[in-house]
Image (tube, rainbow, N blue to C red):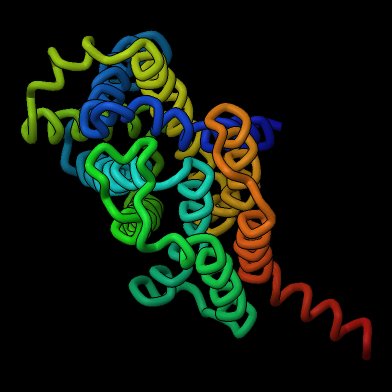
Length: 303
């Protein structure tokens, strides 16, 4: 029951995150993400004091877990924040939906603990075809509603794919080095490392974010509390309970919800081409995850 509740909550948080990312970074994407993690880091301290039964540790054994998670938080999230200014929020969710595929590729090439079957390769092909259906007609355009820097969509897509790579790599590394540290300690350590990195890059966010519009401020607050603290605590809890590939399967559900939210709250286009592309992405993920099982059952019934 705990796993089901945690899984459902993570799906809901991840589905609303792309839209909140756009709103929080509408004026300045770096200000949006740095403010988010600063809030998260500040919130984690009282939570550890109130709920944690073990002291917070900064020993190397724990630090390497925090650093592995920071690859996904700093590298992955920064890329998504920048890319969100070049494309609709629903499209961001679709790109992020490739996490299971990217995780599988990395697991097979770096850690040698996953064999890519023909159905997995077919799933990859179908999912990338889905992205092509949506992105290819618009690669040379600029999404001027939010793109203050007028960045071409193709650059945003490239950065988003790089962010997916870093998030998948971070997930596998945390799974590999995590010896059982609590999810709250993991999020706290990672949030503070991420905040310090952003502080070293540009400390002006400490006094600049209060000048943002109320919509952006509320989005930063939502992402700092639910998106980072609650979302990642539950995410790393699930990471200890189920394998990284199956955890990435959450991204089957979130793109559909994110597309609907973007259309309803942000008036993003939602036509037949987008639904076709989204359907191909999700169908490819189904083939990737369950293709081998479906093939085996079909073969057994035919014998």
